[in-house]
Length: 361
Ligand SMILES: C[S@@+](CC[C@H](N)C(=O)[O-])C[C@H]1O[C@@H](n2cnc3c(N)ncnc32)[C@H](O)[C@@H]1O
Image 1 (tube, helix red, strand yellow):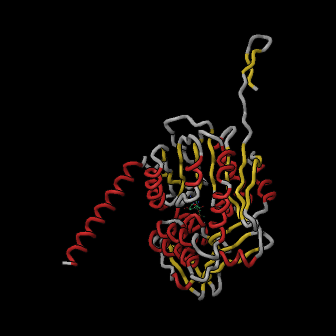
Image 2 (cartoon, rainbow, N blue to C red; image 1 turned 90 degrees about the vertical axis):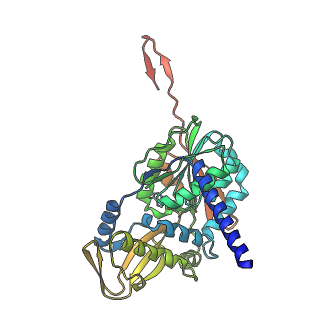
Image 3 (cartoon, rainbow, N blue to C red; image 1 turned 90 degrees about the horizontal axis):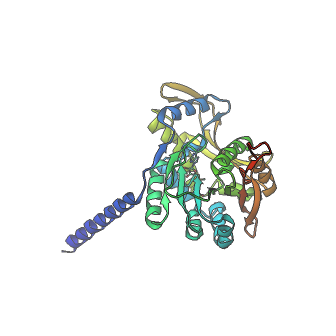
């Protein structure tokens, strides 16, 4: 009898769960898919492994498992970044919302699980639409579905794309008063300063005249604190790093012996960045779609950079893309900072000239 009831309950729960997913999907506007295809992924991997030293682009960490592992990293004691950024966002939520203004189209770069975004969506007045942009399609779809249900009054327009490439911004039903880019999580730290400049210029062109940028940056601090965050004792970061090799094996017909590559993250003081590596523990040959790559004992593949900034240092980079700093919020220990930038508003004034023609300023 007991077994039967348990079965019935499981069936009822399953039906309720399916109904909830259906509800979420109905609430969701279609994802625009501009993510890199298998050919681009293969070309990037082959190009990276052909370099000396070998490299793999960190954006490929994020398949469905990679996104889930990243969420797990965010909960680790050593990983102070997420916890601290969330605290800043919660502590200064009202001030931040006021500074960002009303009627925004909110475009988030590398939205992941959009956890911190909810703080903004809860407070920003008259948000016209929320556009989460992420390379990790399935994760984005699930997150956008949940948001569409939680915020039925806000248009949720997810875009699955590589934000380092050109992608079209979806049109919202209402006209926003300005575009506001949100770029949390210290994801900008994954780019070398010259690439960060280029990406910020791209973001500036999406923001447009008078647009804003709210960005989370990780600040320079004691090396031990930084290195511990990227070498956690439970091995979650190792699993996240190695997942890249699992993904390459599965999607690109490769034969990495994943456990023959050790995870290591070290802080490069001179360049102010964490460098994350997968280090071969033996002489070995790896094949990727027919191309072979030799590894010496101790040879490393660099899989990620995570640059640490000062507020002034980052401001100097953002200024080259036209952004001026409006406000900066930090935590008591100054581990992390949330910065609000704005682009100048360009007014197109049409004046009557003396000769009767018109000119534009
Ligand atoms: C460090 S996580 C941050 C996630 C989230 N914003 C947060 O603050 O917790 C980086 C996110 O950016 C996405 N991402 C990384 N590189 C990307 C790229 N080139 N284009 C689009 N999304 C990218 C990943 O899928 C992931 O969700």
